[in-house]
Image (cartoon, rainbow, N blue to C red):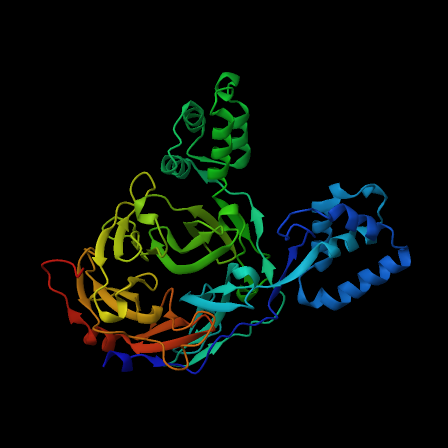
Length: 496
Protein backbone atom coordinates (compact mmCIF):
# COMPACT_ATOMS: atom_id res chain seq x y z
CA UNK A 1 0.00 0.00 0.00
CA UNK A 2 2.66 2.52 0.99
CA UNK A 3 4.74 2.02 -2.13
CA UNK A 4 1.91 3.28 -4.33
CA UNK A 5 1.57 6.52 -2.34
CA UNK A 6 4.56 8.24 -3.93
CA UNK A 7 4.31 9.07 -7.62
CA UNK A 8 7.56 9.49 -9.56
CA UNK A 9 7.68 12.48 -11.90
CA UNK A 10 9.06 12.20 -15.43
CA UNK A 11 11.55 15.07 -14.98
CA UNK A 12 15.07 14.18 -13.85
CA UNK A 13 18.43 15.88 -13.36
CA UNK A 14 21.41 14.02 -14.80
CA UNK A 15 25.15 14.69 -14.41
CA UNK A 16 26.44 17.18 -16.96
CA UNK A 17 30.18 16.82 -17.75
CA UNK A 18 30.15 20.29 -19.31
CA UNK A 19 29.79 21.87 -15.87
CA UNK A 20 33.45 22.62 -15.17
CA UNK A 21 35.53 24.84 -12.92
CA UNK A 22 39.22 25.80 -13.19
CA UNK A 23 41.57 24.46 -10.53
CA UNK A 24 45.23 25.01 -9.80
CA UNK A 25 47.41 22.29 -11.34
CA UNK A 26 50.99 21.82 -10.14
CA UNK A 27 52.86 19.16 -12.18
CA UNK A 28 54.43 16.49 -10.01
CA UNK A 29 52.33 17.07 -6.90
CA UNK A 30 49.71 14.55 -7.98
CA UNK A 31 52.27 11.75 -8.28
CA UNK A 32 52.83 8.96 -5.77
CA UNK A 33 56.29 10.36 -5.07
CA UNK A 34 55.90 14.14 -4.85
CA UNK A 35 58.48 16.09 -6.82
CA UNK A 36 57.48 19.60 -7.74
CA UNK A 37 58.29 20.34 -11.39
CA UNK A 38 57.05 23.93 -11.34
CA UNK A 39 60.39 25.70 -11.79
CA UNK A 40 61.35 23.69 -14.88
CA UNK A 41 57.95 24.29 -16.48
CA UNK A 42 58.09 28.04 -15.85
CA UNK A 43 61.60 28.14 -17.38
CA UNK A 44 60.33 26.38 -20.50
CA UNK A 45 57.45 28.81 -20.87
CA UNK A 46 59.78 31.76 -20.32
CA UNK A 47 62.00 30.64 -23.20
CA UNK A 48 59.15 30.83 -25.73
CA UNK A 49 59.47 33.83 -28.03
CA UNK A 50 56.88 36.62 -27.90
CA UNK A 51 55.07 35.48 -31.05
CA UNK A 52 54.65 31.91 -29.80
CA UNK A 53 53.61 33.11 -26.35
CA UNK A 54 50.95 35.40 -27.78
CA UNK A 55 49.61 32.74 -30.13
CA UNK A 56 49.35 30.08 -27.40
CA UNK A 57 47.65 32.49 -25.02
CA UNK A 58 45.10 33.61 -27.63
CA UNK A 59 44.33 30.02 -28.62
CA UNK A 60 43.86 28.99 -24.99
CA UNK A 61 41.56 31.90 -24.20
CA UNK A 62 39.57 31.31 -27.41
CA UNK A 63 39.26 27.58 -26.68
CA UNK A 64 38.25 27.83 -23.00
CA UNK A 65 37.14 31.42 -22.38
CA UNK A 66 33.42 30.91 -22.99
CA UNK A 67 33.32 28.06 -20.45
CA UNK A 68 34.54 30.19 -17.53
CA UNK A 69 34.14 33.56 -15.86
CA UNK A 70 37.20 35.82 -16.26
CA UNK A 71 39.58 33.09 -17.36
CA UNK A 72 42.44 35.58 -17.79
CA UNK A 73 41.94 36.68 -14.18
CA UNK A 74 42.15 33.05 -13.06
CA UNK A 75 45.38 32.56 -15.03
CA UNK A 76 46.84 35.65 -13.38
CA UNK A 77 45.84 34.36 -9.93
CA UNK A 78 47.43 30.95 -10.58
CA UNK A 79 50.60 32.65 -11.82
CA UNK A 80 50.79 34.62 -8.56
CA UNK A 81 50.54 31.36 -6.62
CA UNK A 82 53.62 29.90 -8.33
CA UNK A 83 55.62 33.02 -9.27
CA UNK A 84 58.12 32.37 -6.46
CA UNK A 85 59.33 29.43 -8.58
CA UNK A 86 60.28 31.69 -11.49
CA UNK A 87 63.98 32.44 -11.71
CA UNK A 88 63.37 35.96 -13.11
CA UNK A 89 59.70 36.66 -12.43
CA UNK A 90 60.14 40.40 -12.99
CA UNK A 91 61.44 39.78 -16.50
CA UNK A 92 58.33 37.93 -17.66
CA UNK A 93 55.98 39.88 -19.90
CA UNK A 94 52.28 40.16 -18.97
CA UNK A 95 51.44 37.62 -21.70
CA UNK A 96 54.08 35.21 -20.42
CA UNK A 97 52.69 35.46 -16.91
CA UNK A 98 49.19 34.65 -18.11
CA UNK A 99 50.52 31.74 -20.15
CA UNK A 100 52.36 30.41 -17.10
CA UNK A 101 49.04 30.60 -15.27
CA UNK A 102 47.38 28.65 -18.09
CA UNK A 103 49.93 25.86 -17.79
CA UNK A 104 49.24 25.73 -14.06
CA UNK A 105 45.48 25.37 -14.57
CA UNK A 106 43.12 22.57 -15.48
CA UNK A 107 39.42 22.01 -15.88
CA UNK A 108 37.54 19.89 -13.35
CA UNK A 109 34.10 18.50 -14.15
CA UNK A 110 32.32 18.88 -10.82
CA UNK A 111 29.59 16.29 -11.47
CA UNK A 112 31.14 14.00 -14.06
CA UNK A 113 31.06 11.00 -11.72
CA UNK A 114 27.77 11.41 -9.86
CA UNK A 115 24.87 13.72 -9.04
CA UNK A 116 22.78 12.85 -6.01
CA UNK A 117 21.37 13.51 -2.54
CA UNK A 118 19.28 16.65 -3.15
CA UNK A 119 17.41 18.87 -0.74
CA UNK A 120 14.67 21.34 -1.67
CA UNK A 121 13.81 24.70 -0.05
CA UNK A 122 11.79 27.76 -1.00
CA UNK A 123 13.86 29.98 -3.33
CA UNK A 124 14.62 33.53 -2.13
CA UNK A 125 13.16 34.93 -5.40
CA UNK A 126 9.42 34.37 -5.85
CA UNK A 127 8.85 37.03 -8.51
CA UNK A 128 7.07 36.47 -11.81
CA UNK A 129 5.15 33.34 -10.84
CA UNK A 130 1.64 32.29 -11.77
CA UNK A 131 -1.13 31.01 -9.51
CA UNK A 132 -0.20 27.86 -7.63
CA UNK A 133 3.50 28.07 -8.53
CA UNK A 134 6.46 28.06 -6.15
CA UNK A 135 10.10 28.60 -7.09
CA UNK A 136 12.42 26.24 -5.22
CA UNK A 137 16.17 25.98 -4.72
CA UNK A 138 17.59 22.47 -5.00
CA UNK A 139 20.95 21.65 -3.44
CA UNK A 140 22.92 18.81 -5.01
CA UNK A 141 25.85 16.65 -4.05
CA UNK A 142 28.01 16.64 -7.16
CA UNK A 143 30.95 14.25 -7.47
CA UNK A 144 33.87 14.51 -9.86
CA UNK A 145 37.25 12.93 -10.49
CA UNK A 146 38.81 11.40 -7.38
CA UNK A 147 35.36 11.16 -5.75
CA UNK A 148 35.61 14.77 -4.55
CA UNK A 149 32.20 16.11 -3.60
CA UNK A 150 31.04 19.71 -3.75
CA UNK A 151 27.69 21.42 -3.29
CA UNK A 152 25.86 22.63 -6.37
CA UNK A 153 22.41 24.02 -7.01
CA UNK A 154 19.50 23.98 -9.41
CA UNK A 155 16.35 26.08 -9.60
CA UNK A 156 12.88 24.74 -10.36
CA UNK A 157 9.24 25.78 -10.33
CA UNK A 158 6.71 23.40 -8.82
CA UNK A 159 2.95 23.63 -9.19
CA UNK A 160 0.23 24.06 -9.84
CA UNK A 161 -0.52 20.48 -8.93
CA UNK A 162 2.27 18.07 -9.84
CA UNK A 163 3.83 20.27 -12.53
CA UNK A 164 7.63 20.60 -12.34
CA UNK A 165 9.92 22.73 -14.51
CA UNK A 166 13.69 22.78 -13.91
CA UNK A 167 15.49 25.92 -15.03
CA UNK A 168 18.32 25.66 -17.54
CA UNK A 169 21.67 25.04 -15.82
CA UNK A 170 23.99 26.32 -18.55
CA UNK A 171 26.56 29.06 -18.22
CA UNK A 172 29.99 29.30 -16.60
CA UNK A 173 30.28 28.16 -13.00
CA UNK A 174 31.74 30.21 -10.18
CA UNK A 175 33.58 28.98 -7.10
CA UNK A 176 32.93 31.21 -4.12
CA UNK A 177 35.64 33.58 -3.01
CA UNK A 178 36.91 33.17 0.54
CA UNK A 179 35.84 36.12 2.68
CA UNK A 180 36.64 37.41 6.12
CA UNK A 181 34.30 36.22 8.85
CA UNK A 182 33.55 37.18 12.42
CA UNK A 183 34.57 34.24 14.57
CA UNK A 184 32.69 33.11 17.66
CA UNK A 185 34.70 32.53 20.81
CA UNK A 186 32.24 29.89 22.07
CA UNK A 187 32.86 27.74 18.99
CA UNK A 188 36.61 27.96 19.54
CA UNK A 189 36.11 26.98 23.18
CA UNK A 190 33.93 24.02 22.18
CA UNK A 191 36.43 22.89 19.54
CA UNK A 192 39.37 22.97 21.93
CA UNK A 193 37.37 21.10 24.58
CA UNK A 194 36.48 18.42 22.06
CA UNK A 195 40.17 17.93 21.30
CA UNK A 196 41.22 18.01 24.99
CA UNK A 197 43.34 21.09 24.44
CA UNK A 198 43.48 22.70 27.87
CA UNK A 199 46.72 24.36 28.91
CA UNK A 200 47.97 27.81 29.86
CA UNK A 201 48.57 28.92 26.26
CA UNK A 202 45.03 28.03 25.21
CA UNK A 203 43.53 29.53 28.36
CA UNK A 204 45.46 32.78 27.89
CA UNK A 205 44.30 33.15 24.31
CA UNK A 206 40.66 32.39 25.14
CA UNK A 207 40.74 34.88 28.01
CA UNK A 208 42.01 37.62 25.69
CA UNK A 209 39.47 37.07 22.90
CA UNK A 210 36.12 38.87 22.85
CA UNK A 211 32.84 37.09 22.15
CA UNK A 212 33.19 37.94 18.43
CA UNK A 213 36.52 38.59 16.70
CA UNK A 214 38.14 38.68 13.28
CA UNK A 215 41.36 37.15 11.94
CA UNK A 216 43.41 40.25 12.68
CA UNK A 217 42.33 40.30 16.32
CA UNK A 218 43.04 36.57 16.64
CA UNK A 219 46.57 36.95 15.27
CA UNK A 220 47.21 39.95 17.53
CA UNK A 221 46.33 37.85 20.56
CA UNK A 222 48.63 35.06 19.39
CA UNK A 223 51.38 37.60 18.73
CA UNK A 224 51.10 38.98 22.24
CA UNK A 225 51.53 35.64 24.00
CA UNK A 226 54.24 35.91 26.69
CA UNK A 227 57.54 34.25 25.68
CA UNK A 228 57.61 32.15 28.84
CA UNK A 229 54.35 30.51 27.74
CA UNK A 230 55.52 29.95 24.18
CA UNK A 231 58.75 28.37 25.42
CA UNK A 232 56.85 25.61 27.21
CA UNK A 233 57.01 22.18 25.60
CA UNK A 234 53.41 22.44 24.37
CA UNK A 235 53.55 26.13 23.41
CA UNK A 236 54.07 26.07 19.65
CA UNK A 237 51.93 22.97 19.15
CA UNK A 238 49.07 24.68 21.00
CA UNK A 239 49.36 27.78 18.82
CA UNK A 240 49.08 25.62 15.71
CA UNK A 241 46.12 23.79 17.24
CA UNK A 242 44.42 27.12 17.93
CA UNK A 243 44.94 28.17 14.32
CA UNK A 244 43.60 24.88 12.93
CA UNK A 245 40.52 24.97 15.14
CA UNK A 246 39.85 28.62 14.37
CA UNK A 247 40.19 28.01 10.62
CA UNK A 248 37.17 25.70 10.72
CA UNK A 249 34.97 28.81 10.46
CA UNK A 250 35.03 30.76 7.22
CA UNK A 251 32.82 32.56 4.72
CA UNK A 252 32.53 32.38 0.96
CA UNK A 253 30.64 34.66 -1.43
CA UNK A 254 29.71 34.73 -5.11
CA UNK A 255 29.52 37.66 -7.55
CA UNK A 256 26.16 39.39 -7.54
CA UNK A 257 25.65 38.68 -11.26
CA UNK A 258 25.81 34.89 -10.82
CA UNK A 259 22.57 32.93 -10.68
CA UNK A 260 22.04 30.11 -8.24
CA UNK A 261 22.81 27.18 -10.56
CA UNK A 262 26.20 28.72 -11.43
CA UNK A 263 27.41 28.71 -7.82
CA UNK A 264 29.62 25.90 -6.51
CA UNK A 265 30.51 25.51 -2.85
CA UNK A 266 33.96 23.99 -3.21
CA UNK A 267 36.11 22.56 -0.36
CA UNK A 268 38.03 25.41 1.27
CA UNK A 269 39.68 23.88 4.36
CA UNK A 270 41.87 20.82 4.96
CA UNK A 271 38.98 19.10 6.76
CA UNK A 272 36.92 19.39 3.54
CA UNK A 273 39.70 18.58 1.11
CA UNK A 274 38.06 15.37 -0.17
CA UNK A 275 34.53 16.61 -0.12
CA UNK A 276 31.52 18.54 1.15
CA UNK A 277 28.85 15.85 1.25
CA UNK A 278 25.07 15.59 1.61
CA UNK A 279 24.00 19.13 2.41
CA UNK A 280 20.62 19.21 4.18
CA UNK A 281 19.17 22.68 3.61
CA UNK A 282 16.30 24.16 5.57
CA UNK A 283 14.70 27.61 5.70
CA UNK A 284 14.95 28.46 9.39
CA UNK A 285 12.60 31.09 10.79
CA UNK A 286 12.78 32.86 14.14
CA UNK A 287 12.03 36.33 15.52
CA UNK A 288 14.83 37.84 13.41
CA UNK A 289 13.35 36.50 10.17
CA UNK A 290 14.18 33.68 7.77
CA UNK A 291 17.68 32.39 7.08
CA UNK A 292 18.89 29.42 5.06
CA UNK A 293 20.77 26.86 7.11
CA UNK A 294 22.27 23.52 6.26
CA UNK A 295 24.45 20.81 7.67
CA UNK A 296 26.98 18.86 5.61
CA UNK A 297 29.72 16.30 6.08
CA UNK A 298 33.32 17.47 5.66
CA UNK A 299 35.68 14.70 4.53
CA UNK A 300 39.46 14.88 4.34
CA UNK A 301 40.03 11.44 2.85
CA UNK A 302 40.18 9.67 6.20
CA UNK A 303 38.04 11.52 8.73
CA UNK A 304 34.55 12.99 8.70
CA UNK A 305 33.28 16.04 10.57
CA UNK A 306 29.90 17.75 10.70
CA UNK A 307 29.72 21.34 9.54
CA UNK A 308 26.93 23.93 9.43
CA UNK A 309 26.38 26.74 6.96
CA UNK A 310 24.11 29.78 7.02
CA UNK A 311 23.08 32.24 4.33
CA UNK A 312 20.58 35.07 4.05
CA UNK A 313 20.39 34.95 0.26
CA UNK A 314 22.19 31.80 -1.02
CA UNK A 315 24.96 34.06 -2.33
CA UNK A 316 27.09 34.55 0.77
CA UNK A 317 27.62 31.55 3.03
CA UNK A 318 29.20 31.22 6.47
CA UNK A 319 30.57 27.82 7.47
CA UNK A 320 31.14 26.72 11.08
CA UNK A 321 32.02 23.46 12.82
CA UNK A 322 29.39 21.62 14.85
CA UNK A 323 30.56 20.36 18.22
CA UNK A 324 29.41 17.94 20.88
CA UNK A 325 28.35 14.29 21.14
CA UNK A 326 25.17 14.88 19.13
CA UNK A 327 27.22 16.13 16.16
CA UNK A 328 29.29 12.99 15.79
CA UNK A 329 28.90 10.92 12.64
CA UNK A 330 26.98 11.94 9.52
CA UNK A 331 23.48 13.10 8.80
CA UNK A 332 22.48 15.94 11.11
CA UNK A 333 19.29 17.73 10.05
CA UNK A 334 18.18 20.98 11.70
CA UNK A 335 14.60 21.77 12.69
CA UNK A 336 13.14 24.74 10.76
CA UNK A 337 12.42 26.67 13.99
CA UNK A 338 13.10 26.44 17.68
CA UNK A 339 10.77 24.20 19.70
CA UNK A 340 9.98 25.32 23.22
CA UNK A 341 12.95 27.67 23.10
CA UNK A 342 15.33 24.85 22.10
CA UNK A 343 17.37 24.53 18.90
CA UNK A 344 16.97 20.91 17.83
CA UNK A 345 18.39 18.57 15.23
CA UNK A 346 17.96 15.00 14.10
CA UNK A 347 21.16 12.98 14.18
CA UNK A 348 22.65 9.50 13.97
CA UNK A 349 25.49 9.78 16.47
CA UNK A 350 25.81 6.01 16.96
CA UNK A 351 25.88 5.29 13.23
CA UNK A 352 22.59 3.38 13.06
CA UNK A 353 19.83 5.05 15.10
CA UNK A 354 17.83 8.23 14.51
CA UNK A 355 18.19 10.50 17.53
CA UNK A 356 17.17 13.97 18.66
CA UNK A 357 19.82 16.36 19.95
CA UNK A 358 19.59 19.88 21.39
CA UNK A 359 22.08 22.75 21.34
CA UNK A 360 23.29 23.70 24.82
CA UNK A 361 24.46 27.06 26.12
CA UNK A 362 28.07 26.26 25.19
CA UNK A 363 27.29 25.67 21.48
CA UNK A 364 27.58 21.90 21.84
CA UNK A 365 25.01 19.43 20.56
CA UNK A 366 24.02 17.28 23.51
CA UNK A 367 23.85 13.50 23.88
CA UNK A 368 20.89 12.50 21.68
CA UNK A 369 17.61 10.95 22.73
CA UNK A 370 16.95 7.82 20.62
CA UNK A 371 13.87 8.08 18.39
CA UNK A 372 13.97 5.16 16.00
CA UNK A 373 16.28 2.16 15.66
CA UNK A 374 16.45 -0.44 12.88
CA UNK A 375 13.39 -2.65 13.17
CA UNK A 376 11.73 -3.41 9.85
CA UNK A 377 13.30 -5.84 7.41
CA UNK A 378 14.06 -3.08 4.87
CA UNK A 379 16.07 -1.04 7.43
CA UNK A 380 17.92 -3.57 9.59
CA UNK A 381 21.43 -2.33 8.79
CA UNK A 382 20.87 1.29 9.79
CA UNK A 383 18.39 4.13 9.73
CA UNK A 384 18.78 7.89 9.36
CA UNK A 385 16.90 10.98 8.33
CA UNK A 386 16.24 12.24 4.80
CA UNK A 387 16.41 15.91 5.72
CA UNK A 388 14.93 18.37 8.17
CA UNK A 389 11.57 17.71 9.83
CA UNK A 390 8.56 19.25 8.11
CA UNK A 391 6.02 20.95 10.34
CA UNK A 392 2.41 19.83 9.89
CA UNK A 393 -0.72 20.48 11.96
CA UNK A 394 -0.45 17.04 13.55
CA UNK A 395 3.30 16.79 14.17
CA UNK A 396 6.79 16.91 12.70
CA UNK A 397 6.98 14.77 9.57
CA UNK A 398 10.39 13.11 9.28
CA UNK A 399 11.40 11.33 6.11
CA UNK A 400 13.79 8.53 6.98
CA UNK A 401 16.10 6.22 5.11
CA UNK A 402 16.73 2.59 5.90
CA UNK A 403 19.34 0.18 4.61
CA UNK A 404 18.40 -3.43 3.93
CA UNK A 405 19.80 -6.53 2.18
CA UNK A 406 22.45 -5.86 -0.48
CA UNK A 407 22.82 -2.36 1.00
CA UNK A 408 19.53 -1.30 -0.58
CA UNK A 409 18.40 2.17 0.53
CA UNK A 410 14.70 3.05 0.79
CA UNK A 411 12.76 6.04 2.18
CA UNK A 412 10.24 5.82 5.03
CA UNK A 413 8.52 8.24 7.40
CA UNK A 414 7.96 9.03 11.07
CA UNK A 415 5.77 11.57 12.84
CA UNK A 416 7.04 13.33 15.97
CA UNK A 417 4.99 15.16 18.54
CA UNK A 418 4.77 18.85 17.62
CA UNK A 419 5.60 20.14 21.10
CA UNK A 420 7.69 17.25 22.43
CA UNK A 421 9.63 15.89 19.45
CA UNK A 422 11.30 13.29 21.67
CA UNK A 423 8.07 11.32 21.27
CA UNK A 424 7.37 9.36 18.08
CA UNK A 425 3.58 9.40 17.59
CA UNK A 426 3.27 7.51 14.29
CA UNK A 427 5.26 5.72 11.61
CA UNK A 428 4.69 4.56 8.05
CA UNK A 429 4.62 0.76 7.80
CA UNK A 430 7.01 -0.20 5.04
CA UNK A 431 8.79 2.11 2.62
CA UNK A 432 7.39 5.22 0.97
CA UNK A 433 9.89 5.07 -1.89
CA UNK A 434 12.27 2.24 -2.80
CA UNK A 435 14.54 1.61 -5.80
CA UNK A 436 12.61 0.27 -8.80
CA UNK A 437 14.17 -1.19 -11.94
CA UNK A 438 14.89 2.29 -13.31
CA UNK A 439 16.49 3.46 -10.06
CA UNK A 440 18.73 0.55 -9.12
CA UNK A 441 21.67 1.01 -11.54
CA UNK A 442 24.30 3.71 -11.16
CA UNK A 443 27.50 4.89 -9.51
CA UNK A 444 26.18 3.54 -6.18
CA UNK A 445 23.53 0.92 -7.08
CA UNK A 446 20.25 0.20 -5.31
CA UNK A 447 19.83 3.55 -3.58
CA UNK A 448 17.11 6.18 -3.30
CA UNK A 449 18.11 8.93 -0.91
CA UNK A 450 16.93 12.44 -0.14
CA UNK A 451 18.39 15.26 1.94
CA UNK A 452 15.23 17.33 2.27
CA UNK A 453 11.66 17.65 0.99
CA UNK A 454 8.97 20.33 1.25
CA UNK A 455 5.20 20.72 1.16
CA UNK A 456 3.46 22.98 -1.37
CA UNK A 457 -0.32 23.25 -1.72
CA UNK A 458 -0.86 20.06 0.24
CA UNK A 459 1.59 18.03 -1.86
CA UNK A 460 4.82 16.60 -0.45
CA UNK A 461 7.65 17.01 -2.95
CA UNK A 462 10.53 14.58 -2.43
CA UNK A 463 13.69 15.10 -4.52
CA UNK A 464 15.83 11.99 -4.38
CA UNK A 465 19.11 10.64 -5.67
CA UNK A 466 18.68 7.48 -7.71
CA UNK A 467 21.79 5.30 -7.27
CA UNK A 468 23.92 8.46 -7.60
CA UNK A 469 23.22 8.37 -11.33
CA UNK A 470 20.58 11.09 -11.45
CA UNK A 471 18.13 13.06 -9.33
CA UNK A 472 14.45 12.25 -9.51
CA UNK A 473 11.33 13.76 -7.98
CA UNK A 474 8.35 12.09 -6.34
CA UNK A 475 5.13 13.53 -4.98
CA UNK A 476 2.54 12.33 -2.50
CA UNK A 477 -0.50 14.14 -1.07
CA UNK A 478 0.40 15.06 2.49
CA UNK A 479 -3.02 14.01 3.76
CA UNK A 480 -2.68 10.58 2.14
CA UNK A 481 0.74 10.04 3.69
CA UNK A 482 -0.42 11.07 7.15
CA UNK A 483 -3.51 8.86 6.86
CA UNK A 484 -1.35 5.86 5.97
CA UNK A 485 0.79 6.24 9.09
CA UNK A 486 0.21 3.95 12.06
CA UNK A 487 0.04 5.27 15.60
CA UNK A 488 3.02 4.40 17.77
CA UNK A 489 2.30 3.33 21.36
CA UNK A 490 2.82 6.27 23.71
CA UNK A 491 4.46 4.19 26.42
CA UNK A 492 7.80 4.78 24.76
CA UNK A 493 9.61 5.58 21.57
CA UNK A 494 9.65 3.05 18.79
CA UNK A 495 13.20 1.75 19.16
CA UNK A 496 12.68 -1.94 18.57
